[in-house]
Image (tube, rainbow, N blue to C red):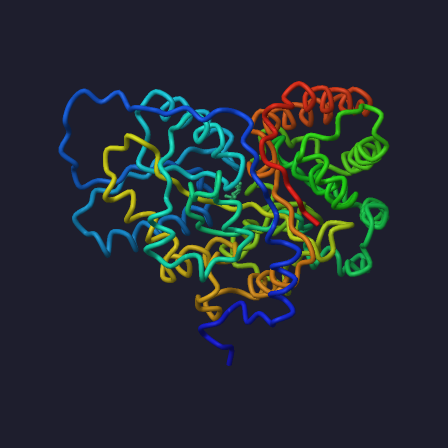
Length: 448
Ligand code: GAL
């Protein structure tokens, strides 16, 4: 029987690795003055018992997970009217374009889904966020949340977000049946060339598009994992805005690899949401999909089993490396229901909230004192990989690693690249843009 209380069961060695290698991940150097924001409230309002929040969890497994969290909230605060506002569009690109103007114009929801790290920076800089130090303090979070997650939740030494999950982004999911029938040994896939050889074999046996992608951010996620596979040094330079030469050999190499990857992918990607891509994998219409581990419970929910029907390997070059996408909520200034906003933040990070949500989501919990028996085989292996990781990196595509303008630009560049496959142009666009927004790189990541 597995120890029910201590899931992370970390050894002293793992702790040392974590503290030494991973914890000092970020070091925020604000270079832009932070403004103070006074919400435009002229009417004295009485707080009503309600909670309004935004999220982008709209696939079947995402809905199941967030609904379970909402039900838990309602069971504790039955008189509160909870109004979730889900906005369709994976990774939050669509939701952010709705929430940003609301927050900026002084009409913020009580909370909204947001990746830890850079995604909160524009709000923080504009003075639109309240610190949530009080939540971290009252819930004793500093003793149960790994330092890497703590650091990424802070700006200028104060907490501005409360994490709900830890997702891993550097994974290739595979359909076991197709792999087995074609005698492919996925454990031997260590380089992108190995991966392409496997794709060639699949193509030769009639699998037309062995590696499937969806809407452009899913392809940008593939590119990002290739940057990570090029090595921690390169990834660190990339997220610190230091890849500014269009002739950078590492960038050109990654783009060439990405170009090759695209020669194995489906042409009908453009409007394909991430869960539909994952469905193809689950149904045997695709052999490989690079996706974060939100894919795990999506396939689980459709009755497939990790290890039997599908599996996952890390993307080439990232063995022992954990790519992070950390979903969080925050407390904007000037919200209408501060009491319930704080209740929500406390609930999502509580032991009960963590187990309720993450066990259905595919992510791993942010706390060390939760019930591991509630998680599936994939999640248990991810928990172990997290604690063994020699290095971690914040995802750019999933909001944490780079300024938001860069994240958006990257998706545009990738969307163009899928069509024109022009390596020099993509390198020039990306590096020119990084140089232009140099001032926005206010976090100095140290990933080694
Ligand atoms: C990520 C987010 C996950 C998952 C995914 C697809 O950015 O961290 O929770 O929902 O997008 O929407």
